[in-house]
Image 1 (cartoon, helix red, strand yellow):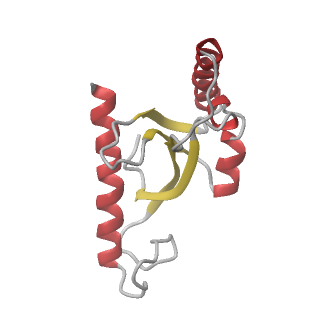
Image 2 (cartoon, one colour):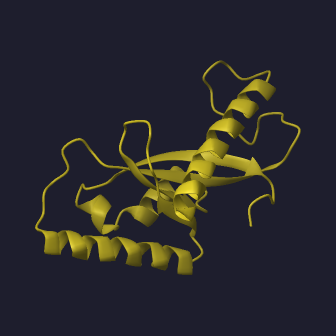
Length: 144
């Protein structure tokens, strides 16, 4: 239950922060994303958020193979955390209807670097989860 509340909090924080930033940037065009170069009153740290989305028709596998993939998925997260690449991760309870199954918060500096870090995750490689990436800006030093 704590993980679900954390996931909801993370998503709410992301959307709230992005909305707040959009309202504060006077030079940004409608629909543009905030960036560190935007003139904002605070400094930012950035992370790459990876939404792990279940596709509409994921490939089917025998239960034993799915269990191995799930174990590999957890091993991958542990490896990324041990390498100080993964800040947080957890499952989600998705109310959007998009079937977002979980989130990775990566300390990557770029989308390409994040994609490289997650490409060998067994559930992603098998097409059971599709990663959607976005850069997340948070007040500098606010996350520990």
